[in-house]
Image 1 (cartoon, rainbow, N blue to C red):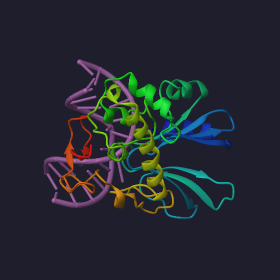
Image 2: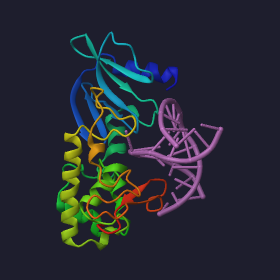
Image 3: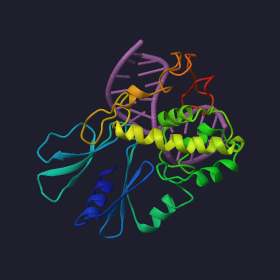
Image 4: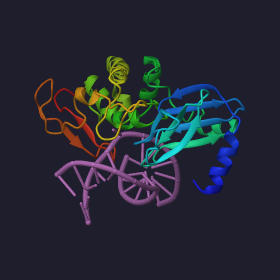
Length: 241
DNA sequence: CCGGGCCTGCGG
DNA sequence: CCGCAGGCCCGG
């Protein structure tokens, strides 16, 4: 942000209070009393947490919001700055986050919605799961883990799936994400919860990051490629999936 | 669909 | 020093 952007950002936030907090997929929407929305996305290395107001700032702290009791503040820290921190007017918000722009939340999607998304596309499943306009909230780790749990090959095309496979994908999506949440997420490198605690789901990964290690189900070496979705690594078991 | 870009930090 | 990373956007 330039200095003048920081100035107008502060001005727009001055005197506002938080009316409501929403989340859809990986986006957090802070609905403000005046009608605008503060949007926060953690990107790769973002962290949102409550800190004591007198605690030293971590490097790359981009936002500090005072909380009511005055002794604490909400801070947004993001070394890599792949996250988003932006204030939207109602119109601009609808334009950017309207129904066409964000698929159903991965924790709430129904099997029927999954069916509708998949039946009409020839895209590969891995690409569909990573596309936030199809399903919102799944990233690279969880896409691989969900497809393994569903026993579906990441290269399969959406429209090829039988109803039973759609059901399996739907079930696996909820199961993997809920299990990951229960374990405070996956800490491979940087990730920590808002409280600064590393997650533990990395202990439970069955394919992600396990290239050439034996499949936990059938012992076949896990495969890894970057060609299914270019630029992103994909891991799978060639036998189970 | 693909490749490149955006950033920083870390491990090999 | 290089290559790589959990995300997403853009242009071709």
